[in-house]
Amino acid sequence: MTAHSWRVLGATGFIGTAITTALRARDIPVTPVATPRLASPATTVHHLIEHAHRLESVIDYLAESFAGADTVVNAAGLAAPDQTHQQSLTGANALLPVLVALAAHRTGVRRVIHMSSASVQADAPVLDESIRTAPFSPYSFSKALGESALYRLHSQWSEEPSAPELTVIRATSVMGTARRTTRMLARFASSPLSSVAGDGTAPTPVTSVTALAQFTASVGEFPGVLPPVILQPWEGATTGSVLRDAGRRHPLNLPPLLCRAVIACARFGSGVVGHRYAGLIRRLEVTWFGQWQVPGWAHEHGVIPQPHVQEILREAHLALGR
Image (cartoon, rainbow, N blue to C red; front, top):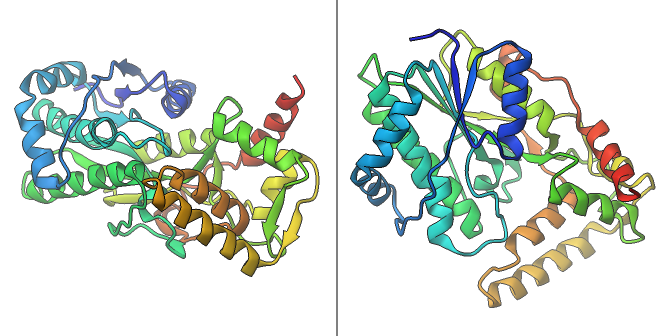
């Protein structure tokens, strides 16, 4: 096995491109791996893993692609918080990571890093690094199912010294100048509707893709044992600072009770139509209220990337006028 050789699935996507760039900046050999298109009707971990074992040809393809790799990053998936087609979401966000793990196990890969989402904990008052999940939409359900399946495999392989180390990185609300979500935030922040609940000092998990990529590279190179879940570190943003950076204007300060009432009504309406707008409503809630998160593993081990969220949000604002 070639030391420090990486494979990245989803290397041409939003997060995968940034990770590949960060690895090459560190002179780490990295090879992109084409991602198979998948769908699955599974709704439980048992059926998901059972389905994965039946896809022998896909496991063979991935295992061959992983040959000689030390670390595999799964940055592929369907990043569609508003999509409701569950089988496609499950295939991309739950079945694929299981197949990646099975192929890595067969090939002798040392470490597998799966890029997940803090959305698996929904509107928890504080994001943490427990395996507890509380999905609120088809998208977050698919991400939570993928995580749970990896925990199951990790448990099954715990007595095998040669089994790959399986670690989930939960990305928070990741921004990038080319991302549609970031452009939407910049438009909102630049408009007269720009607003926060309260005084705008609440911490928010809005982060940058640059910092996430640097963090992922550092996690992969970490010499010690990794925990099952690692939360992307906070970059110091608050609900007010995010809107000021993205809109170059001060947001309105709305009464928190009014904002809560608006969110509750919106969720009721979304539930009537099959939770179609759950992702959009959750983004508004985070914009208004933010969300706390534990310092976690990154702070404990001093693996803190340089913040880039401010510059990305300011670039997004400038891009509106181009």
